[in-house]
Image (cartoon, rainbow, N blue to C red; front, side, top):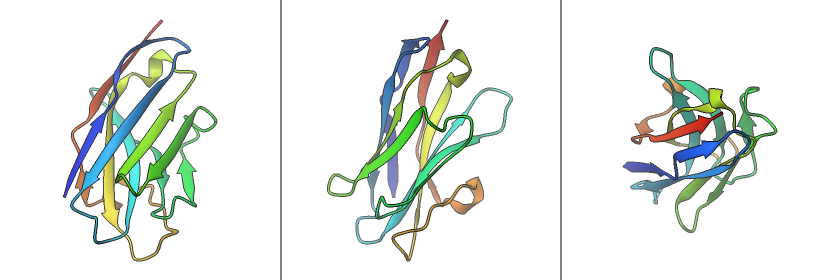
Length: 126
């Protein structure tokens, strides 16, 4: 199983970025996906999660109403649209996946995910 996050970069305060997570190796099973971020010296932070069906999503309070998670199962990708970015959003963003028996479950804890991809750096300048 491989996950590859992309789409990070440098953006100004109030700007937008769209991250993408390509998931491979889980095509024969349903998978739930989550996005996390981490800054040096801090614990990895949960941001958003989406069920296999895409019907259910869940967001951390810190990003609710600014970030939107979505998925395209035909392309095996999960996106994180980030709007109204702030300097405190600067971090390495990573996606994670896990098999799920049902199409409606979302997972918000780091320990619930089996597979992780390398992150992509997001820097928001003021």
